[in-house]
Amino acid sequence: MTATALAIALRPVADQFTFLTTTKVHSTLFPYPWASTLHAARISLMYQGNMKKAGQEKAIGWKAYLVGYLVMSWGGMLISHFLLNLPPPPLYSIHPYINYLGVHLLLTLAVSSYPTILSPQNLPIYDLVLFPLDAVLRVNAITSSLTVLSSNVSVNPVLVNSPLFHLIIGAVASAGGGVSAGTFSLWTSQWAFSTPVFLRSTAGWIATLDLWGGSVVALVYGLSTSHPAFESLRLSFTVIPPLSPLGAKALCTIVLGGLFGYRVVTAIPASAPQKVEGLKEDRDKGKAKTQ
Image (cartoon, rainbow, N blue to C red; front, top):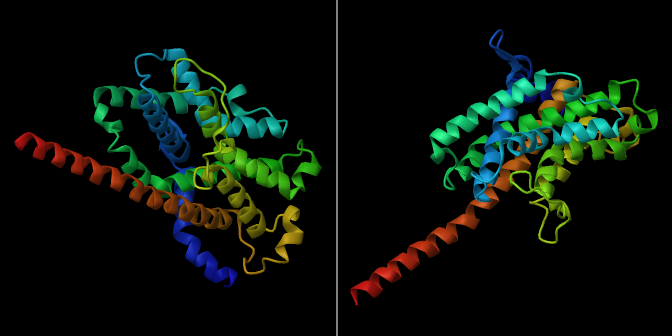
């Protein structure tokens, strides 16, 4: 496929990506991009959902509730900046706090008023409907960290030219927040260190998709933008023509969206037998009562 044909195919995704990352929610009242705002909302729903599953709604205090949410939201960004030896934005700007805490508090009020928003029946629906948005937001986080890696003169050139480090940054930016939250049980009142999810014996390739999927995005982005770190590999991947950064982000979104979609689809049959078994038990109980 030629670069022109690929660019045309990627145009719809690229346009959506541009809209989400450059358009503000409101130029005056809430001057923050839709991408970060939707990311804040998505993490808030997941954080509150996990808190509800753990039965911690009334046990967790406000300080732990807010800080745990922020760590889950920013974990990938914080860790990637520390690896790059650069100060993360929350250390010198108040705007990330306004953007994320404003959304989180609003959704907290909404969920407290309408608890069915996070009912067990609705949570899988959110994953099914929102996985394309999840892919866009995740790719935005990963490529933002990769851009800092490549463009900031303070970063050690050894790291900039290391394809392995690109893959590490991709994984960290993608899953750092979720792994941190799960490892320390940040949605509970008693934080405690446990084995990271991706190191547990029960974690298969689907359960660790957020982690290795970030590395896949870093690889595709590096190859499609002809980054010098991937020069030796690019000779073997001539099927991917050079793309602009925006075109590469669109391609990464399609790749990661396909992986996320597969994960959502494979999770559907797992819940179906449980429902059928539950109906069978109810039917058997009904027969027993009539005898």
